[in-house]
Image (cartoon, rainbow, N blue to C red):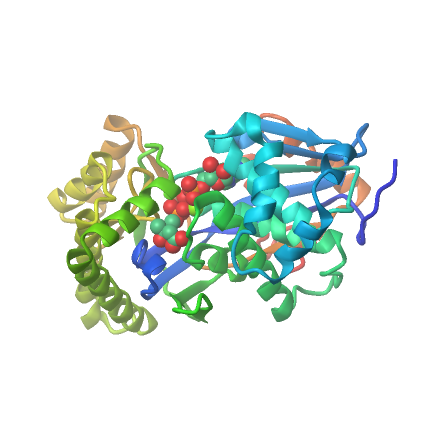
Length: 419
Ligand SMILES: Nc1ncnc2c1ncn2[C@@H]1O[C@H](COP(=O)(O)OP(=O)(O)O)[C@@H](O)[C@H]1O
Ligand SMILES: C[C@@](O)(CCOP(=O)(O)O)CC(=O)O
Ligand SMILES: [Mg+2]
């Protein structure tokens, strides 16, 4: 079997999910937004040699999807069309058309978008890397508003950029390399949900927290917010399924039909995010904490107005209001998925416990314990013994705790993560 790669295998790449604090949806309309990475909820991608196949194998157990494409399948895609993708800031319609043909059996299923982003990035970045198997496992909930689509796109972009030799240093991932990864992850996001703002892939690439704004010419402007405060918060997953693509296109439809109504709402979201970022950079002044809580309440109301909440999310908001523990807003695309509750400064802990218990026992919601900020994308090459001891995490019924315990790129990790 011929294996043409610039770096040794096996290796693992990883990227975090995110919480949008202010500005989901309005970010798509070039308004300001603030998001932070969720340090312990991440996607991991294992790249290894195929055992018995000289094409490309894909294994996405989290969504029950696997596939393999032979060298013949791959060689049928027109090389001139592939070359065109390198200069584009969006998805190349000609390549998408060819991939639609390859993926015709998946059309209209959720797996189609995952396969499309995989093949699009693979062909654009390392079409000659063959005889490889790519397995993805995430400790993030998928389709829940915590940016799993961006996190997997960053993992794919980083892995493929290593395989073609674009990223060859084993010391660190340079600023230029991160720009490259962020660009291609944005294209992966475009494959998954059409018109992303780019905030999710920026956070998954760079980690920490960012204030972000997409510009009218399609470029993005973002600043890392250093020393992002560890906000006292509760992150709740309703487990109600929804699709970012459909929710984002619903808001675009409203903006098109009722521009005079939608634009002031989006403008108000912009002002919330601008003021929110001022407050978050100087949270030490307690006097502003109430204003931050107020902004959370206002931002949620504006998201309700553009039609992206869900009765299941309103349950969380209502309960936090009833128990007077803080302010809740949906986070991510909404329509189900997750909500973020910022707790009052001197919150009554027994009320927070009641909040947890009710959401868990009565509604069967899931509560995440995670800090905000932390490492962005990273990779680690595996020694033979490491590969042997870690492989089961990607093929067996490993829990998210098992995966985090063994792989989390924390300061006390036994693996040598390159960041
Ligand atoms: N671990 C994963 N394995 C396979 N596909 C994934 C994974 N994580 C994300 N995806 C892709 O991203 C989609 C979910 O993205 P999206 O609707 O934007 O929700 P979110 O980004 O909030 O999780 C999935 O349907 C799938 O195509
Ligand atoms: C709704 C939006 O602002 C965030 C979507 O996040 P998620 O896919 O729901 O995690 C879209 C975007 O900014 O690309
Ligand atoms: Mg997404």
